[in-house]
Length: 276
Image 1: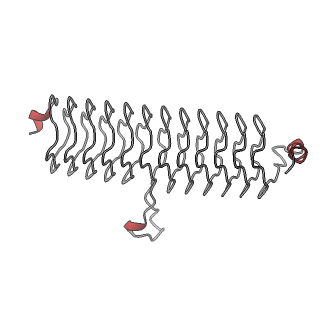
Image 2: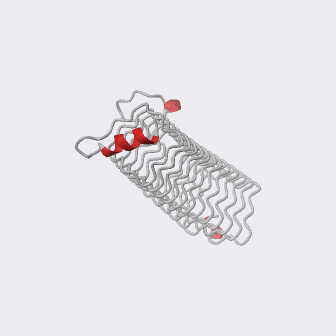
């Protein structure tokens, strides 16, 4: 679409009659500050488009191509981004509350300071994404299927966070059950009460991470860095901590029944004697 055609379409847009831009080619378009609330952008091509500060509340972005798009500070509250491609997109400080990101590609995306509370990231790929300072609250991260889904355990929905940067991220109470966090950076993140049972945290950086009351049973923490981590009251039943670094970690009240601590560094660990 030409700039004039885009301007004409936006001039006719209203909440009562949302603009239909499904399948439109908007690659490289300047849509900064545009009001696209409830617009239909299904399968739209938005490669490298500038959507800085755009209003996309409730917008339909099913299968949209947003590779390298600029969405800094955009409002995507309740937007439908199922299967959308947001690889290397800039989403810093974006509002993604209750957004649907099922199956979305967010590899390499910058989500620094973004708000994703109640967002659904089931089956999303966040490999190498930057979520530093992001607010995930009770975000859905790999929810098990519903009772009538008739799926085997191997087919349960998952989110991929391999190598993701979650430094300082707020993940209180987040459901990360069986999530792939291999090599992820969770330095200083708040995972209080989070469910990490069965998660793969091989080689993850959990330095100074708050894991108070977290469920980490059967998780793979081989070679993970837990230096100074707060694991007070955490459930580490049958967790694999082979070769993990727990220097100065606080394990007061933690449950380590059946945990594998072979080769783990327990220098200065707090509370270990009480559970040993």
